[in-house]
Length: 310
Image (tube, rainbow, N blue to C red; front, side, top):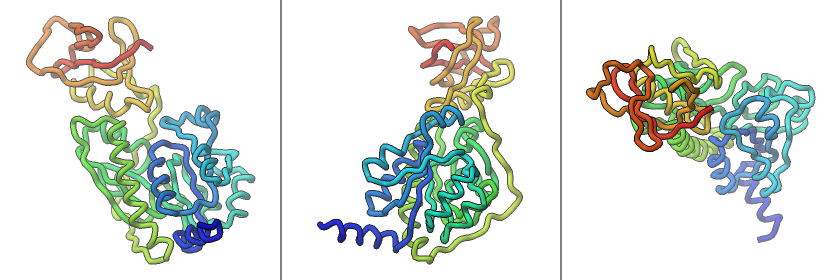
């Protein structure tokens, strides 16, 4: 197939529209790959460098520049994650892009960027409830920590506020007692791919239906590594289990003091609610099974399967 024919077919998939991708998180990787494999053409990737990922403390960082190089897609490295630097605004103004697609971007897009997009920017936000409940940061982590049972992924048109745009489509999935943050990202991945591939054609054709968010909004707060400390006195065994699985890899992990030392806990599970060690304090290691630790907790015993000293 000649280059001119291939280029024509790619533009046909795009309906003649210019698409820019902004991404720096592993959660959007397979969705972007799916669009490429279906024949969509990206005119540019906006990526953060590994050094910027450290500066902005991005958990789950992914460098999309390698994919861009393989696909011969131009890469733009922004001066600021918030895309508010003059050079960043100039890039979008000169790019004349029609649509922005995310590959994971944990900052609000400024109005000056959104205004130059003829179609707009596609947002993705999940919550344990229908939006506007659960806007804000780290919704997957919070949903696990809170012991929620389902998660709803919302594909929406971005406005300049936090997750407040009109909704295009929703895909939901279970949060089971066996899930951790890694397996939830697998479900996130599947849902994002389906939402994008099913709705992008109609969006590019200008034939998409949207509906507003209804009700009083609520917001998840930002989580930092320091928020991961286990409170053995106040949290019960199930709360600690949820706390650990909501912050495991690729996040910094939950941590606590055991036997006088700080331990980072990667995997744990409720062990038993009837076996008791009545003279042990909460947070005391009462047994060791090889490398596994059995810890006395409020309401039962916690088995720590994977851990390390900090």
